[in-house]
Length: 410
Image 1 (cartoon, rainbow, N blue to C red):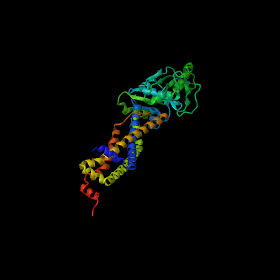
Image 2 (tube, helix red, strand yellow):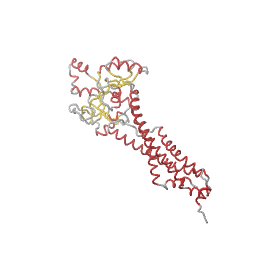
Image 3 (cartoon, rainbow, N blue to C red):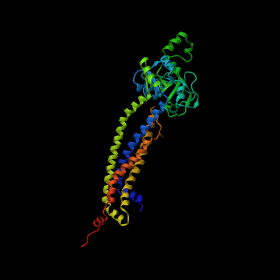
Image 4 (cartoon, rainbow, N blue to C red):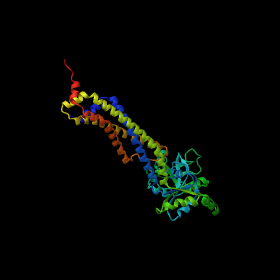
């Protein structure tokens, strides 16, 4: 007797009930899988963009805002800080590297970032074409920027004031594209990078080369007023994590924010929403389990004649009980496959929409080990729902079934 084939036929002998149970179980499992995938990919994206950044230094305000603006470019910065203060920080013996970032302009909502070549090297990005900037008013495009804007090496563009697009365009100080970066799956994909001096030139209203033509006193006055938005800091020793942030916060006009601390706080805030989704998934799984249990319990009563026939043909009680378990396992297998497909599709769609909106770039192929809990959860729900019906089928009294099935004669 082929139990797999027979259990499959029994499963679809009640198509409406089967479809309903399959839908409930799929939705519950898909909700759990979706939460696991989103959590994993957001955490991986944060870890990837935070790699090697020990401290973010900028204007005083919200530390989380400083991290979101300076590392992930998802928020507006709290303000600017004096270039001299950043240069003094770079000379501190506990600091190994300081990467200045200057924000303020954008192109089609993609941010123009004034920085140094160290920023590109920090993420290990490589050029797909062209070269890095060598003089002010040259720019290198991230892969996503080049794809959306259609700009290429040698073309010219003008930035717009503001970080959200739609601001005043600086037509008198255009940039020339000198290179396009390879896709790195990191924050650089959606940035336009240029020299810090380019940002100063745009906002100081000086034409290229005009600054060098000024008198020494004028150059000194302008340099004393120059600012950057923030700086990414890498420690020289682990001991710097204890003293350097407090030193910056208490002795300077700047603020030091530890990315690991702030992102942990952000993820804990996001955890409230994920727990709600997980709770909803648990409710759906509970309802699905009860529905499967009721369906299988009713199936034992409906199939009393079939069970009697199977026992007469020599099927032992354990095979009759296994028939009910296999029917539930078929349902769990189908629901698990559909749930994983649905959750993966939703994550891909959400990732594309988020990336298109200049949001955090997530890796669509990252799969957490915790996702294995979804098949295990489906198996557990199926076995729990089928346990009592299977035991009932195992313990059925064949003699009473035959006597009830046999018509009385007079």
